[in-house]
Amino acid sequence: MRFLLERFRMMRPAFENGGRLRAFKPVFDAMENFFFAPAAVTRTAPHIRDPLDIKRFMSMVIIALLPSLFTAFYFFGWRLVSMIVVSYAAGGAVEVAFAVIRKHDINEGFLVTGMLFPLILPPTLPLWMVGAGVIFGVFVGKELFGGTGRNIFNPAIVGRCFLAIAYPAAMSGNWISAGGKWPGRMLEYVTASNIDAVSTATPLVLAKQGQLVGLSKLLVGNISGSLGETSAVAAVLGGVFLILTRVSNWRTVVGTLGSAAVLAGVLHYSQPDRFAPVLWHLCAGSLLFGAFFMATDPVTSPATNAGKWFYGIIIGVTTMLIRNFTGYVEGVMFGILLGNIASPVIDEVVIKVRLGRLRLEKG
Image 1 (cartoon, helix red, strand yellow):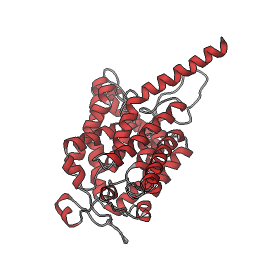
Image 2 (image 1 turned 180 degrees about the horizontal axis):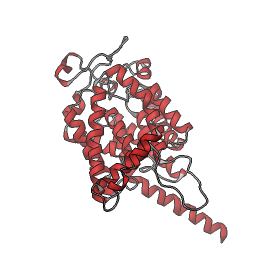
Image 3 (image 1 turned 30 degrees about the vertical axis):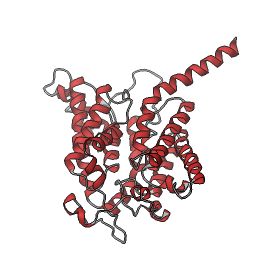
Image 4 (image 1 turned 90 degrees about the vertical axis):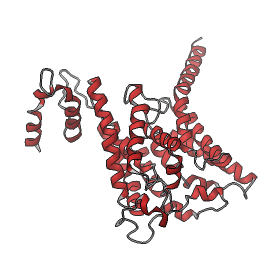
């Protein structure tokens, strides 16, 4: 490994100012940061290394996604792999292009976006749509705002919203039944050409028709739905890992799930024949996956702890209202986008309230 590192860094002069490959310096730096450690060192004391840099932060999220990735692969097969490859290739190309144009470093944030995006899509969505969606999400949702750290919307959610509006038939008609008995669909590659033989409705669609899928199937994930969102257990395992490692903030998760549970409980108590029970709503659809992996994005969520509570409440309440009172079967995507829009305002209000209290205490 040391030999490879030395040989790799011998190529650095070609990518520095004056080198023939200087335009691709962001690509070189990104490869160095990903495969090795950055060459930058502190020149003067104190020599303190931050305990959680961006690469390790994103690595934790990838690890947390492993349960959802495994269940997606088991229930829906090799199609998952091709969608991930397309997502990384198309979205990564946009990241590299903007890094070269701006002469900035390539941020590791896309490692998570490129993995999350296929997991929130129907299993047999055409690959060109996967590429178009992730390109739109990265370009419009992040790069137009200045890149990682400056975007106000979650890029993966923006990409999915674009596909849902531009190609509603494809986004609502490419559901397939999950593979049940061993080995599931791990030996299959299901495409849109043979979807007619295995197509089925998602639990939320069936709920609109008055049919509730059993809770046991929702927990395991043996149901139709987006690739990584079907298994409640997998989402909880990964989400709890992120909270324990302090990558995600528990306030956002509790605010989202708690507000959704309260509203679902009130609706079910008032009209039990019309509205589903609380636990069913928590486990169905993408609520758990969205709460743990999408709403907790540190860039697009509030920075203040108090703001995270209000942010989560907006997402949870919006999700339940859309699910139960509109023609859409799922509202998590719109809830998170609405929360992203409100996030800067929430932080501003919280900070002003705190400053006002401090002035009163001093006065």
